[in-house]
Length: 424
Image (tube, rainbow, N blue to C red; front, side, top):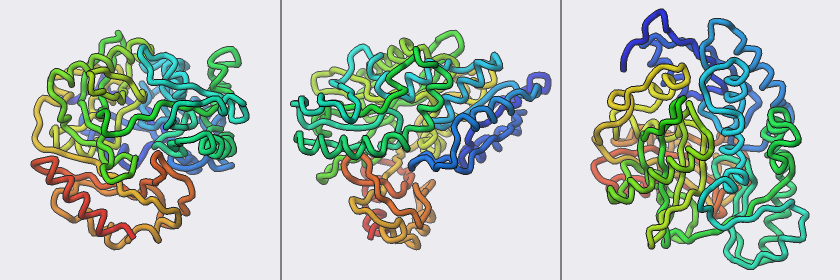
């Protein structure tokens, strides 16, 4: 991928590294990269914040670590940590996205408000009487900053709205606390005031059969130039569930439609002010050709890396790390130029609550990783976790399996067989 010269050898601070981050970054040490890791054992990305987690203390620790004069940049693949990453960049004068751009990415209400052609939405405090005036159903309800589609629900009547908002209003202070603490510290009371309040967002819900959903991953350089990494498809269940079945690459969109999807993604990123960073944008394509943004994330789409390695023959980490270090990226070298397989990241989902070990056959799941074509498996929660919250569609993703093969139909059939094998 191109060895970095010793004189320019980058030494990067890595915030909240995952096991995958460590594996990918270790491979880059041969190119001259060095890394310093800073972790928070009590941080949870797929659950409510532990009482012991202090977002401001962790932010201060990151800023203190960044004061090391040997460091030259910072990297993070986490939705929460990327806000701290932006603050560190501003404090040290390193290349990277601004705090404002990361607020727009992480707070989905402000993100929606900044779009050129947003889906229908409104937002209110949990105790607002405005909830009784909603008349367009179904409606999708969510909190502003949660990742992984957690604590989201689709409601079809005012009674269901009241019940869902009551649940979200109770959960909001704990789940949103880490983000809100950083918004208050980084932005002040005059900047993004709605990010410092309990809010619930109500959005237009579109049945999966009437639209297709896709994601564009790319990066923007320090000068504001946009570059494409890949377009993927978000494929939803077809058996009555409303949750996400899988994310697949390469996209099955017609080339002309894929080009228009990329154009819309570049537009929303350009207006967000996000520069010197990787990002991914999720979009709807309507039957009439209208394209609307559904979500913007200011980070690499690390969950797709295992597929990228086989489908495109490379991962996005070398490009992302060069970007963080202020090293030029050659798209002909550090971005995909060929397609060698079809891949999908499949959710293993349960509609029941309970302990993970009661919902999954863990012995059978452990054996899935040895199956031909399976390039990765992962439990989302520790096996003893009691799952009491749900994702969109009233279900919860307990695990994932990454599968590659010659056709989408083949990997989809293998995923269905795996689910039958491991779900109790």
